[in-house]
Image (cartoon, rainbow, N blue to C red; front, side, top):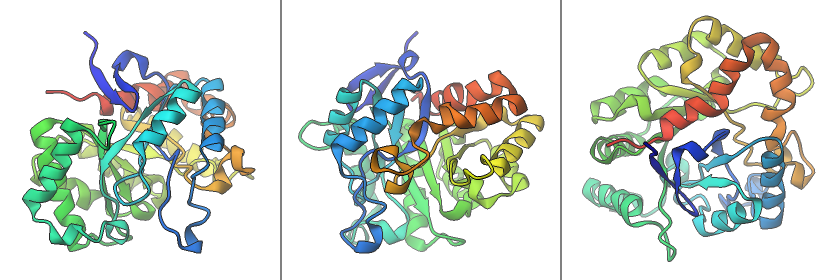
Length: 305
């Protein structure tokens, strides 16, 4: 039986997700400060062109992980999805403390819980676009009190309405703390995906996260083009050899101008489906690769209950 998933263009069948990147940014505006200029992806035409290149390479679905207070715009994502003829999923939730809204400390835990429930069940903005997942984040080598609070609240929300969670692990750190907090709050870790853990460059650490029941995202792909992502390929080969291929997702987190072909950067959204694929297939095989770009992200995103 088909399970319906929220996209920015309305509900879609899980069978239409296809090739899915679980952590991307098609429209993001973190701050007007000059230091965030490269992180600002606000040209809709360029975003559409990038999304089309993803589709032409065989892609189907992008999960835009831009959260509250980071320039999130589901209505613009809808325009991109329609123009590029792809599925785009948006999210609710919050980033690490540095990027959390100034109004967050003024709200009670119940207020935040109700805010998230409202967005999930009633939708975001005038178009009432419903998110497919929640985001939470932690800082580098620390989980602040505000971040602990959000972990607990979002764990409660996931416990109650079974929405998937995709997290931000700053430089790959604090994944274990995130999972412990979410589990204590009643979350189902099989619908939790930890992002950026490949930045830790520690296979043992990554395996310990997966052993706790969660999935992980290798999403700092395409940053080492000179050696064709040799370290990431080596790490993924080891993880597959050790039996972890069912809980790994591939994505690009390419929310910077310098990574978008449409802005004159590289490697672009199509990289995972082209150049990286050529490097990975001889090492991990077609079945494991397909799981990482299709089966595994779909498992996380399918909302149950």
